[in-house]
Each structure stands twice: as C-alpha cells, then as structure tokens.
Image (cartoon, rainbow, N blue to C red; front, side, top):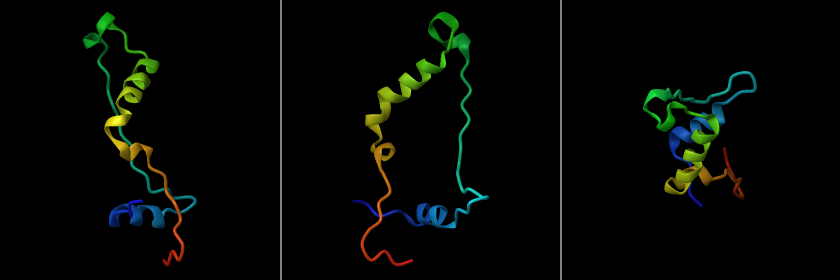
Length: 70
C-alpha cells in the first residue's frame, strides 16, 4: 500500500459535490498519419489497453485505513 502524495490528497479532500477537482486531457489524432487513413475509437482504446501494464498507477484503488485522522 502506498500513501497519497500531498497534492493528490489535497485534490481528493477539497473536492465538493458541485465543484469537482479533476484534471482532463485532450488528444488530437491526425488520421492522415495512420495506416489506412482512419482512426477509430476502438483502436485508440485498444492502444491504451495494450500499454496499461507499463504504468501501474492506472490499476491503483483508494482504500481507507484504520484510524484515518483528517
């Protein structure tokens, strides 16, 4: 088990119901550079799925620990 970093804990504990503290990303895919000239959403998902094992952070889950003082 690994403890959250300070910034991660801050984002988690300052999140409110009507004011989520999340960060998103935008990716632009140029179809002209792909094989066949077509980029399909399921191909993008398959590419991410094939690489998930390279970054274990995407497999982590939050857990409450005993005596969790805040």
